Image 1: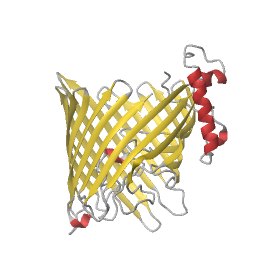
Image 2: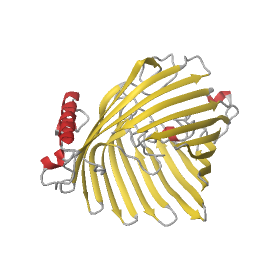
Image 3: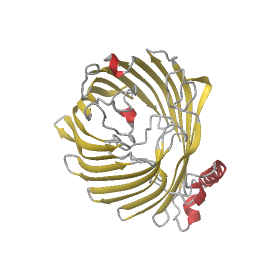
Image 4: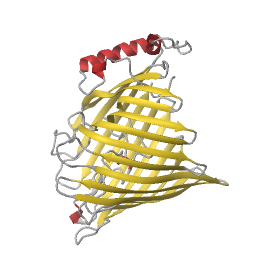
Length: 423
């Protein structure tokens, strides 16, 4: 199976911009899948033409069935959702450094289990489960790769470092992708990435996608002790008023084996300037994490600070995979104006062939006020079990306990059950 990131000469040019038609897109995918399946044994044949690149391509299916429930201590009704996400991907073989990929994604509720606020205007009297029904083009890009240089144009996944600033929000059924032009150069242990994003295809179907003028820059060096990254993320929605969020930072993350113990460590600092139509704000970001791995267990202790500007603005990460940070109950998808200090400890390991983890978070405000200091705490737990190479099942739980009443949060419990299949 060709696992390179691949790019699309399969599709008509009209199918690669944001104004593509579903009829065109479905036609391209259908033809591509038929060609790929009909030539599955051609992997050893030399690619000598564009036709060879298409017929020697690979097709994949990814199915994710998930049940989610949300119980909040407020006037909203408890939410339940049973959804199926289907992702179909076709990637060509390489032809003189050129490759292509086209991918479609569909999310549907099943069996009438759809009592939830989908975050785009349906069932507002229920708690939010941000998995709206949608069918859309998830990725469609062209790529050129040669001598350590890679260029990619079109709709694509972008995930940088630990996805704290740029990510795909892969936990949600409709993941986040970007219409962008990206470039990367890799030489030995050094790499530099640049991207220009002109549309953010968010997790809320197409109705909440955002036109943008984002520049992302990340340079990294892999040493024997870890990976050192320096970055600048200059984000701006394409509107008629000032709204820039400019972030510059450095990150170091690594691991070191000491006898039978693996020492894990991460430090990161960033500063941010944000503009609105009337004023400007600035805030800082800080992360420190240390961990040890031994006897099949991994234990980590961490502190993450998303700073505040005098209680009026909280450090923002609008393109992040936010679900992975500050608790799985998703109470802090937007940083409070008072900022957020998250002290956490986690333990995880393997049992009966699966992976488990427990996490505890304690949340406080960076800039306390007379009514807001304690932002609550949370306990998270997860267990996932691979079955053969194609299937995975899992269960996940999050319990958030609210802090000060002035923080505007309520006690929240969430449960997930899922089964995933990849072919």
